[in-house]
Length: 225
Image 1: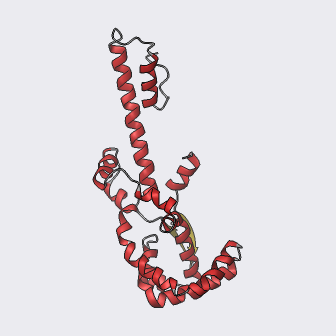
Image 2: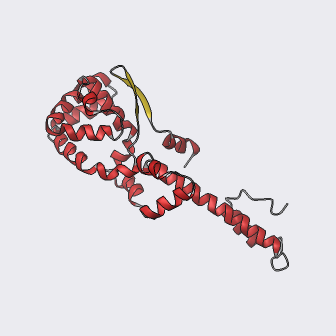
Image 3: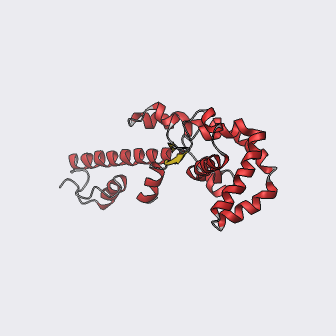
């Protein structure tokens, strides 16, 4: 993963102006994923009823007809609000720190714009629901919840931040960073041992030096110099 991609993940929130207020849209936090399934299921079931409008909606989205797209989306959202309004608002509130009354008071166009940005900020998550490739990234974790918490807390992360702010992708980056730091530390320790018992290991033993470089991510090239 490039540094640019990492920065996009680490700084993935967006700020927009809605109804005169500047609000921050955050990606869904990893620790809140269990709160998403039920409301999302009901919203999707309601959305399926609007399938006759979906093709036109996607056409205008793909052809960047933003005004027509937003208008069509307001019609669909209006119907969804009648069937699953509370659930849709709950999904929005997982990204936006605003009370229910504030969201309900929005005009349909402002509400549609809010939904669009919430979707964009959480686009990878929503795509993972329907795309096997994307979904593999979410299902392929080798660490359990207890292990993730143990590693991150050991490296100074707060439990509240891990559960209520970090996204899945951010968790992956932090875990990867922790493992790289551990490997670098192990490389230093191995190098120190090699130098201390130089009589057993020749200092120019290429196999040993390669192991150390691999552990240290090839950053430690001045062995003992």
